[in-house]
Length: 254
Figure 1 (tube, rainbow, N blue to C red):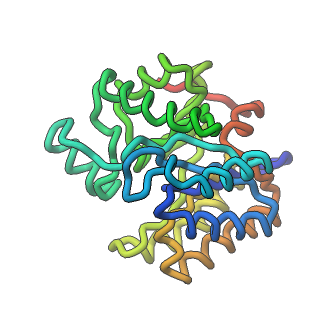
Figure 2: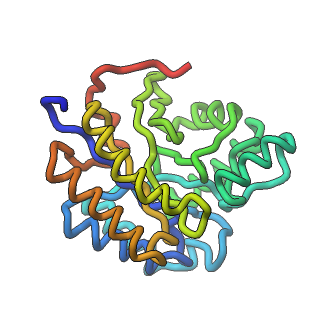
């Protein structure tokens, strides 16, 4: 166990009008624990209505930011298109269940969607400096587009990539797959992964999805893991705050 506190980042995924009730439920649970949320917002045409047509949710998100949460861009439409090789599309479909929007885009296509998404958030007074691609899958072209647009960071399954310095913070994203064949295994691995990250002195990342709330057992496992981390040496923060902290040791992304 390390001597200093271990960062704990909890992200709430798929934030949109269609999932507003689930988002609020997860945030209420985090509020009771004093944990800020990194809110992964889908600003484009995913389900309905779109974010600009839900002023109540926009006001609520602004209040969350004022209270210490962070807005993170989470794609544009949250749906994978026909780009990429058949193998890449198959892998993306298996990992992200059809949501891997940025897995195979070239730089031009990624740039266009990132500009659209970031523009909507900025117009609503909810600017984002970070990006988490749906399914944590993104192409090299997406990385180049993010750097061109001045994003501070992006995330993958394995960690957080600082786009300004080139630094990389190792931290495996822990989440559930409700309804999938690996649901039971995931319920075991999430708390085990959190304990292992803490023991190694690495940031703990726990991802919350709307569908998790349909499985009371998964919700309980997740909140128990967060409580255990807080009872240990974990200190909650957002992604942006994580990058503001010195890494020990730091590695460089290839």
